[in-house]
Length: 334
Image 1 (cartoon, rainbow, N blue to C red):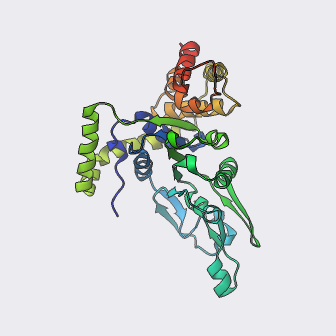
Image 2: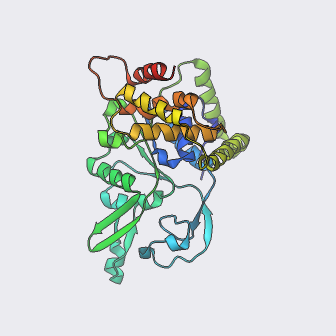
């Protein structure tokens, strides 16, 4: 199996890479939505980040990646108490996935052959404590969207049908990608993504040449290419781990909270999820950069990603969401 393309070797796409890093520092930010051209490294970045992150400690044999033996669900059966290390899970949710495949269902083989009602876990169980990646998320069927909304809101997957009643943790970073030309996302699901990023193909020839050069080198010798980038990936990993530790004691100044609320009011963002995401993302950025406290520089850096997908359509304002956020940032933060 070929290794994942190194995260640090991705050329450009700084906003997308920063958004993914921030969700790894603080998963409570709520995931990342990446919209843009095909072939711009969206799925490559997700898999590269997961490969970069340190392994997670799980109970061997646990279907939901429990960290402690006492957290293993009763329906999982005997799995032992040995703790092992596993790579951070990255689970793909295909567009054609059925409800049973996503949430889990009765194990038909066990029911027919052994006469035993046994739960067969789905993709939400596999993605617990990791990443759930959906390509072309804007084409996802509505009933699957509803399941994801329930799990994302509660952090738990509940299955009650076919004579079984099962619940298990389903805490994951939701990453969706898509092409806006193929349809818009349902507002309910759009609001569940903490950060939204627009990616485009590079416009200058030197950048495009560098992309081709690195990809060709990777295809020719994946192991050797990964060795050459291991140091930079390791440095990013160490900054993420240090950021996680700093985040627990990171102060939240009153002026910073006031700036965050003023910015969301100026933009007319619906609800309070915009403020919460903005604050979390700015704090995660400060922790990742080893800054003493979040402030206006951090808000400026994350404002577009946290708020661009939460704005109401204004028929009297022809400016795009990016320009509206930039204008509000200039007015409120100077």
